[in-house]
Amino acid sequence: MRSLAATVDGVHGPIGRFSGPEGPIVGQNVRVTLRAGPLEHEATLPDGRVVQIRIGLPDDGYIKPSELRTVTIELRGNGEHLAAVDTILEPEQDSEARALMRRIVAGLESGELAPTAHAIEPLADTLPT
Image 1 (cartoon, rainbow, N blue to C red):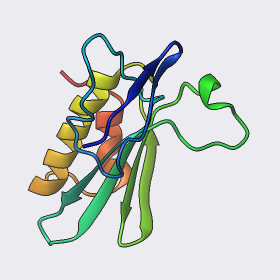
Image 2 (tube, rainbow, N blue to C red; image 1 turned 30 degrees about the vertical axis):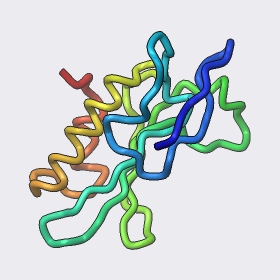
Image 3 (cartoon, rainbow, N blue to C red; image 1 turned 180 degrees about the vertical axis):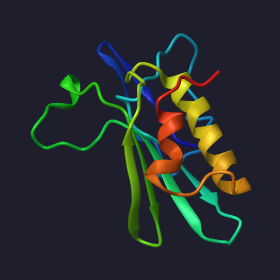
Image 4 (tube, rainbow, N blue to C red; image 1 turned 60 degrees about the horizontal axis):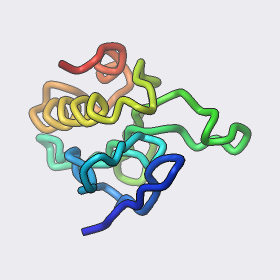
């Protein structure tokens, strides 16, 4: 189990690669945002391929992380980039990002969604309920 440390300006700490959609365990009254780290999860497609899903702030060497407002979904599989789309989520919408992750994982694993930008874009443009 990994932990996060609360600081005055937010939550910082290691979030393990491919942590589950339910995310890290933190103490009460600690606000978790996507600024603390991306959500990452693996999904096994019906044909047996494994796709890594990442929801978080994009890596951008030209913009300070504190100034980034864009949340993206990225899919990788077999060492290749498969898709990337911007979402309507804000970095503070952690619970909505977790719900979106669950929808994407379920869709990919059931075969309802293909691992393409075209397939995941409609999900990225709506708030999960």
